[in-house]
Length: 570
Image 1 (cartoon, rainbow, N blue to C red):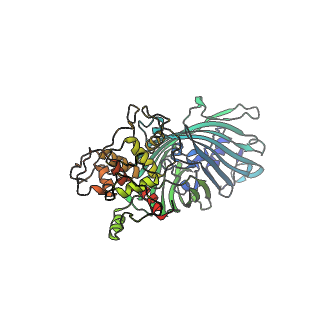
Image 2 (tube, rainbow, N blue to C red; image 1 turned 90 degrees about the vertical axis):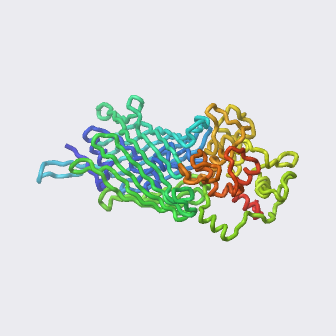
Image 3 (cartoon, one colour; image 1 turned 30 degrees about the vertical axis):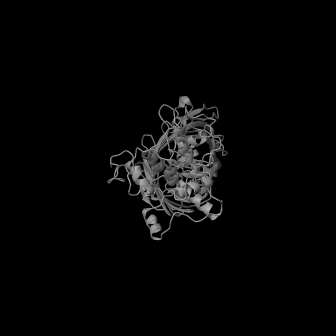
């Protein structure tokens, strides 16, 4: 009897493959089970609710929907000193959604082949050759927001994705029984991510879900006159989440530090295979640096059957202008030599700034007596004939008009008391964030002509989840927006954490049970409704153009542009 024996110090997945091969129970290895991306691997290999860059190509394709620019990811590492592991992927947007293309490879050479003659104490082990192993996988992935596919009717906080993958693996050299033992196959993954609020993201991934009849299989080619061997690719699924504990938008607000908890539950969907957990944390003491720790459970063979190894991981990462540099250390098994070092380089574009001032920061501003900027700016401000010098929102109107965020009318009036339309409010939100919309219209409405100037702004505002259309496929661009509706939109726009209920009235005429009370309370805390201090809120009253200018000028996004204007930089 010939037995294949490796000097790889017990690497679990190759040992399992070789055992299956020699017993003619062939099997295919999904390399994503090892881990993808040094960032994820530093946090115990969790990714289901966490994937948000090009690594989502391999892990949870739904995470691709979060990308906004051309992105790429790479990783390389050497496991146990013998196994070369390499990953490369890139993703970009298209009119149909976001697509990604990726490649994975693991290989090792010079694996000794031995024979055993005799039994018991007289057994003799002798080497008769070596063989090389190579495993390559190609991924084609797609992700998109459900809201984009439903034209904004629902699903703005849900992302979906799918990935098709092709396997090529086998042995070369060494003579029988390993010579030309090669095969190919394919399968597919499905992914979903759901963002119930601003501090949590939940994900679900079903890997290798295709049945053999639909192509989900691996075929070892015929050799030495033997027939082809067809194997199904083992299916598994993961449920996980990412929870923002500390940060600008988190359970506990902090503008300078971040702490995230990431956890996955994995079911192998095979008899005798234990369920696994992957848990990690990421702490960012500053914007460009992150420290990571985790526990990555992997199956292991034991005397009583298949058990679980609790592998400790840690890592460090840097982010500079959208470029990411990550390192991860990962133990495999209980032997200290069974450890690996992984390095990743990637690009996912600059993150959208999401900052809200804490109560403490606002108190400090008041204590320091820092007023709203009223200095004479270097550039000449745009003024209007119907906005007198003593008008309570004159400065916000002039600042936003000079910046091009808002505009007046041909007769040099602004009409500050005119009720703002839903179309104008959507455009105002997009311009305040500084987004470049071009002519791109992803989300279409029956009553918004595609060629209209407002269509790209409405589309982006709906895509970002700031404002919504109606179930009948309309947006009502000329409709008015009430103060209560504006409060909800501004809460979404600012990414503020909303409580389900408030304990006290935010304004005397807003009951704690009012549907918009949590949004009104949060916006009031941010200072958006400071101009109504000591007054009634009148939630059913329609928002005016002057009020809209005042509210938007209080947001950190508009303030940043106003600061540049006043400094003469713009």
